[in-house]
Amino acid sequence: MSWIPPGPAILFCPADRPERYPKAADRADAVIVDLEDAVAPPDKAAARRAMVEHPLDPSRTIVRVNATGSADFAEDVRALADTDYRAIMLAKTEHPDQLDELDHEVIALIETPMGALRAADVAAHARCVGLMWGAEDLVAAMGGRSSRSPDGTYRDVALHVRSTVRLAAAAHGRLAFDAVHIDIADLDGLREEALDAMALGYDGTACIHPSQVAVVRAAYAPTDDEVDWAHEVLDAERGSHGVFSVRGRMIDAPLLAQARAVLRRIPAESA
Image 1: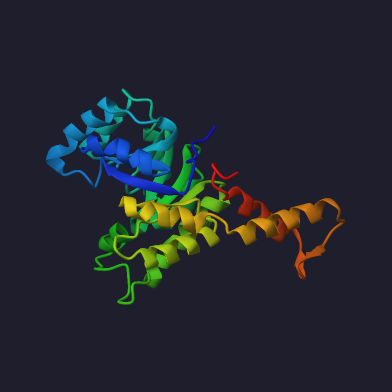
Image 2: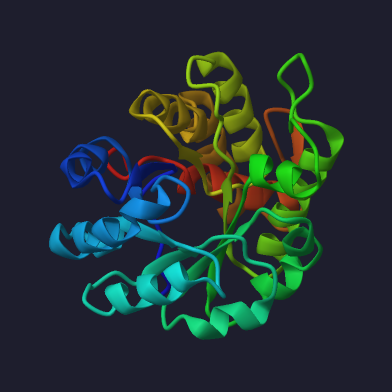
């Protein structure tokens, strides 16, 4: 069975800070133990040792490895052989052939122009269980300086890649995770982005600080009214033949699918 996180809030944790591992696991739905950007080059070896020596629950953990072709990638893969982790996030994924180098379930991180252009091909790979996208690496790779406009909203090219990743994941039945919101203090902006991601069918949003977890969880959780509506729709379906009406609104196949999606978003502890 493919790796699936138990909730929408996925928290990055530097691999070279093992004292933070249990705190991250306690606060978030799943943890990304990060061997890539969060670790300075001189500390990579120590980070790999920490990952091996301080194991977390594999069902709630992703390990982000360095990009293929690098010496660090090869060392990351060797270290992973000494763990029970099965979900791997591959940094700077640009081609489906790169997934052949991992004997794991892969969440492909789309954060370069070439990766964005090949997102659907990557999603089609048998080892791909999900996609995530990264705004800042993407813009840096294009020679730009900011993924966002002065008002804090994404620029068009970032929105395009966000949509491309969501479409590619949906087309191939893969998980989809929205990019991090790097302005930690801007919880209102995070909330709006998480609500939008949820509305588009994203499965979760990556977090870079524990304070963001509760905001993401609340954004993805359906309201009481949404849950009541979904139950009404599915109850009415059982006694109907074809199209019917609930609360004055016509219900057909797409709305039935939306009702089922609402119920899937109920947190496990509340279900």
